Image (cartoon, rainbow, N blue to C red; front, side, top):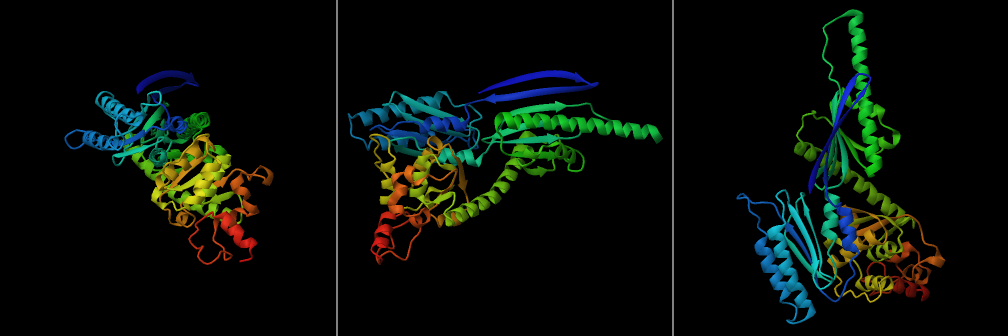
Length: 450
């Protein structure tokens, strides 16, 4: 991680302005997840290790014992003198070396993914946002679900903290400021003169403030456009600077404004992060409800939505999904195993083998296909009660696939999307536990007139 400082000054209509830009450069987590999702499974174990790196009251980390104990025990489940055992034994050595030599002080969470038997595959990321508990997963590919959820918990957004002569524009992501631009304009003082002189001075001051607000918003507009930021928060005095800033915002930028906070220009960065992150999460909880209502409405009308694990996997594989809505806990995913296996086989890469099919691996596969095959936004729903009714996952679609181009799963005897995902009265008694998406049995029942 490097810290770069750039400063310069410009001169215009007698007003001095100074900009200071701080950038903390690191690989964006989105790109890191993309790289992991592209991993091609082999017949070798892949270790996914998530560690809480927050120091205790004595300033020490407590993950060392967990790593040594858990990874050693997992390694023993592989037969000695096999490629699998050799790979995971080497993984243990490399992980311990990394943790001893490479962890930096600000780190609160660490994620490591390694499979030494596949071209010495080793990827690690250190985060300033916390990982709540130590977790170890051993599977044939990286376990992405916790990492993708972390990205949703600590989103990327822009904040303007301003008064009438100064402003700071932050980009926050993963629980820290990734950039900050500071704008300082001329400071106007109160005048005690009266009459026409006071009126002229007041107009002069107002012009300074208006010019300052315009410049702040111009900088914000460029930042949002160049970095494709979707959410903005304004912070400052709601009687003086906030109205001026809002008046300068374009219609497009105004649609990205999610909250306004009353905070002083000297608010410390960590306090600003805390207040704005809370504001973002309040906004997000409301939009989550709206998204679920929209999803269910589209799904019920057989519109641009799918629901349940099988259909969502199929739509992701087709590249149709605009946004994936998934429960924040993989335990909320409910599905018919046979139907999910069917979809995975139809859309599997050559020689792909799914050795384990449970809620965790299915959640991972949904995230992987959203990232790699559909370039979808992923939204984790904290209050998933409504989402549980449709299997814990659904997706809003970009488009429908025509009948002639539909994937085999979607062509199952011309049953509609809605019919393929809900129980019908045409099922024979005893078929009640078929589960969501059992299109073939529903089709047979309909053809038999039962």
